[in-house]
Length: 169
Image (tube, rainbow, N blue to C red; front, side, top):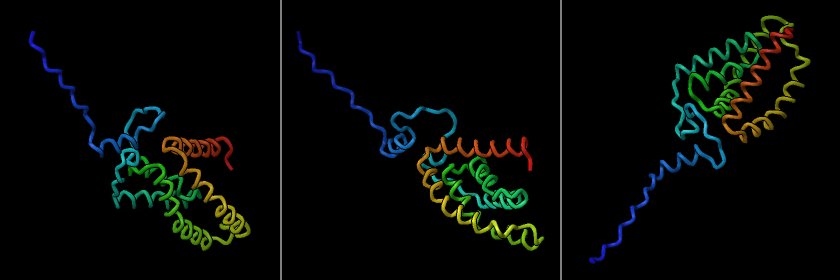
């Protein structure tokens, strides 16, 4: 009997490096697979920036933040995530950076509108507490996975809403 040549082994297919890198970023060992669209951060893509959309989000944050006294973050962060498709981490950081001018202008207008609109006795203690607490919160947020941070933000906003409905004033 004639001897057959040994069958060639099929060469293993390897995904291109850029595909493997993206998969490594999206699928971490032990992480559960989730359904739904991936955020720009999870896909490894930079967020597409729309200046008019960002300006509209800023307007909504400034208007509602000053009207309601919530600092704008309660408005800007969810809008950046939902409307501008920014990752939760980037939305939190961007909101903090944008809130500085918003709070200065809003506080100045409140102070000029009425001499009782700003309780100046509380400004310094609130500012000191905020400056001390901000680095801790920023470090904690940076360590949280995107999905967990998104849930924490949603829970805090929901709790604030329920508190206002149940115990106004």
